[in-house]
Every structure is written in structure tokens, then in C-alpha cells.
Figure (tube, rainbow, N blue to C red):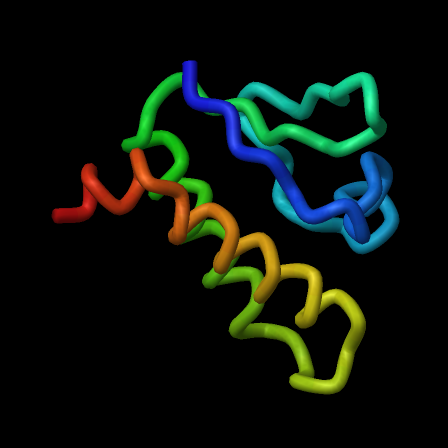
Length: 87
């Protein structure tokens, strides 16, 4: 299982709040309150990146949702295991 930590400024309810694509395995929360994205594999994480990018393309650049998606894309694509998979 691949676990990717989100920055502390992204809360657990952000996915519902902004209508973001559902994560295949959902999220978990660390003791300190940080949100963790759960994926079965790097391939699944990359597929979710594609979903986020498709969803993002239909949004105006100045929406808060666009900023959240950009952060998610950055965090997932910069994960060391995802980077290795993409190479």
C-alpha cells in the first residue's frame, strides 16, 4: 500500500467540500491530524493524478478548488515512489 502525506493546510473534508474525485482507497489520519492518501500501488496513484487533472481542466483558474487540486497533483507526483514508477 502506498501512503502519501498531505500538507497540514489540507483537511480531511476537502474532498467532499470541493467535490473532488473520490480516492479509490480513501484517506487516513495521523495522530497529529495530517491527512494521508491511500493507494494500492503507484499505478493507482498515477491514475488518480489523471482524474484530478481532467477535473481541473474544467475549472476556472481563480477558484479555490483549482488551488487544492494543484497542491494534490504536486504532492502525489513528487512522491518518491510515484517518481520511480514514472521513470
